[in-house]
Image 1 (cartoon, helix red, strand yellow):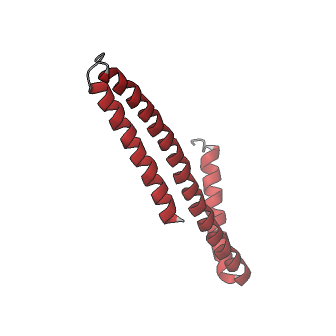
Image 2 (cartoon, helix red, strand yellow):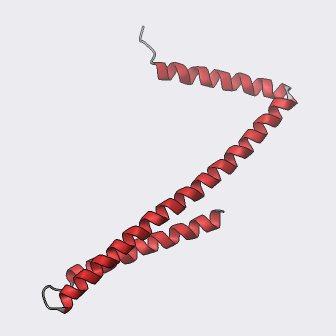
Image 3 (cartoon, one colour):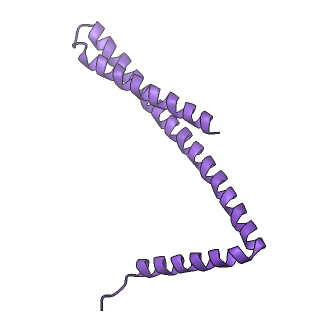
Length: 114
């Protein structure tokens, strides 16, 4: 007979416990009320966590956009002085604009969700 891993045992116990709790909840108004309140609270917490995630990633994207802007300025000055071609400056500009868009859209999505 094959050994059952601890994770599988825990999953089985959790599934049986959830099924028994659901059966008992159908008989108990208090437990149904607590479960409904718990679900509502978790929905609120998950929504707030998602908004926070969008805002944090937006900040990182804006930082990357600023780094791209600094790189663009450095490469543009080298191109204007005739030291290099325009390719690196254009690449830095595209990088900066792309991450600026990611940052702005991340904050827009966070505002829409809140």
